[in-house]
Image (cartoon, rainbow, N blue to C red; front, side):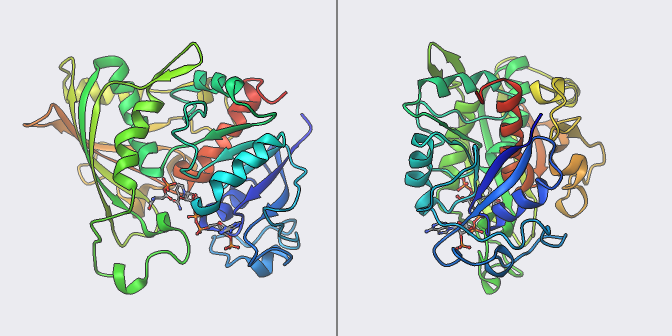
Length: 345
Ligand SMILES: NC(=O)C1=CN([C@@H]2O[C@H](COP(=O)(O)OP(=O)(O)OC[C@H]3O[C@@H](n4cnc5c(N)ncnc54)[C@H](OP(=O)(O)O)[C@@H]3O)[C@@H](O)[C@H]2O)C=CC1
Ligand SMILES: N[C@@H](CC(=O)OP(=O)(O)O)C(=O)O
């Protein structure tokens, strides 16, 4: 396959930098354009970005002149890590122009004709892009905490049915972008509020686990109650859950269903797919963000402490890399699925 040219929208940001890192040597995609705010536009990328990754800025990207949202773009796929203040209007405009926009931003996630894709769970939802009034399309991935939550709820819901979920998050500071949360607010502290986050966790999983019929996504019918906290961890969102099941199951049965879960990315061996999307850990003090986020290249959801809940039925701890599986890696996997399933004609 000839490499497909891609642009990174919001290329200088936390998610944008992760896109650039993860796309090095990608077998399908080649970075052709980088786009950011008027503050960065016109500068070489290396000068515009406050680079925070563990590898140097790739040599082919460093001298690229940053474009602005007003420029016309040449790339087929636009991976978007745009600030949500500008993502909504810009992504619509680019889709109208014929680009395939694969977005991390919240703006279009709940639009009725926009799929909210986790390809292990709902690749059939891609079909809805045919109903969009654009020459191109908009495809979204979920909020980062929703990603790990949905990944474990999907196999449990399929096997046992879910009535209700209570989730409490401990979210890393990289989730707030750069420069993000001031150091004096977060060092030695926990902030029990992340604007808009609880609403996303309470609505996005039902759309992802919903049923696609006749051009509509009918949301799954369980309730989620979420409480979200920012904690002084650099990368890795941890969540504790209690789940009320429709059909009773033992912790052992739940663990088996989670450990054996896989989907379309694994069947098609997509380049960014983790071999095992869910890793069930047996040590009683795992998963931990400082130890476990890079398992399966940062693309897995780690699960531990699966046990009975005296109030609901089952409780557990889950964790994943928020800027990889929770953001850039998820969007790249969606791009690979889009290509593999033949939607990019
Ligand atoms: N961090 C995470 O873990 C996750 C983030 N997301 C979402 O991804 C998106 C990006 O997040 P993140 O990378 O953390 O944020 P950052 O604040 O780190 O980066 C924001 C990016 O948007 C660009 N931008 C800001 N204003 C404009 C503008 N007026 N025109 C064009 N570009 C602009 C910035 O460019 P410049 O540098 O020039 O200002 C920068 O490249 C957000 O919508 C966020 O909600 C989703 C899931 C997880
Ligand atoms: N709000 C998330 C990151 C994020 O930007 O989410 P969303 O894309 O849903 O706005 C966090 O703070 O960790």
